Image (tube, rainbow, N blue to C red; front, side, top):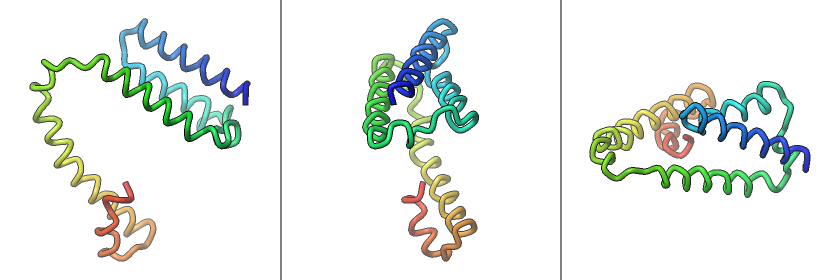
Length: 123
């Protein structure tokens, strides 16, 4: 577990540094490195490496990411993004609901009524 945490912290720090150096979003590098050592190469299996600590560590990481995003939030830009946020909340939610319902119906085999009912909860 110590080796896994060392690899994760090292690559996370490298991703943050690269994002700072290239003036890009750090989440892009974090996702890239995460996929590179996880699903694509199977270097790390978080369920196996971290065991019961996986969920608390993921929760802590999400908190850090949201905190960092809050630090960079500029209120003067929110007015410009009002329409985008409105569309995400309305149209985005509707599209997600319909796609989840279609997936539940055609891939899982739920009836159409049940899939529509459970669509929002399966996303």
